[in-house]
Amino acid sequence: MLTDDGKDLYVSWGEYHMLIERLALKIHASGWEFDQILCLARGGMRPGDVLSRVFDKPLGIMSTSSYRASAGTLQGRLDMATYITLPQGELGGRVLLVDDLADTGVTLRAVVDRLRGMPSISELRSAVIWTKGVSSYVPDYHVELLPTSPWIHQPFEEYDGMCPDVLAKKFAI
Figure: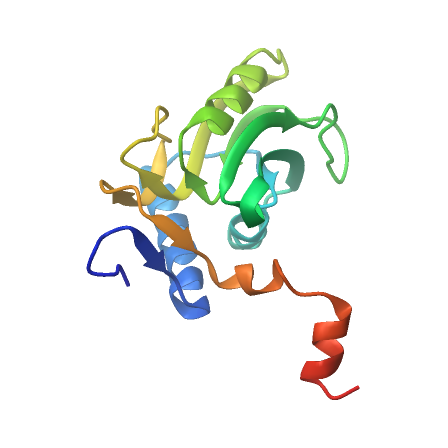
């Protein structure tokens, strides 16, 4: 739920999975047929995996990174992987690009521009759970538009500061 100041959005695992399912329903309701899903690692991996299972489509992965400083809260230079990982063949046809959110829009815009330059892709659409009001890029599909652009505290972030020693203590190993 959003805090009173509108600056933070805290998401539980249950809410997170429900939002991914709602995203799947939005995509399905559009009637658009696609051949492959490409998720952006790391944030798009969980939604991409679920959508790949729901739609029974192959899942490709492209690694991107822009958040590095201050425990991943400050955006830095955007890095995009040179190669896209697929179970077989090459990325092509109608492709659904999946990430968790359109934050500033810089990453999604850069990836979309790169993918649109690939002749093997005949059609490209993008899907995210959240689109922030400050985003310069609006995906084709999203579940929630966040006009105040809060910082989203996703449930898996508990692992960001965790190391094997902390896990060992948790399980008294």
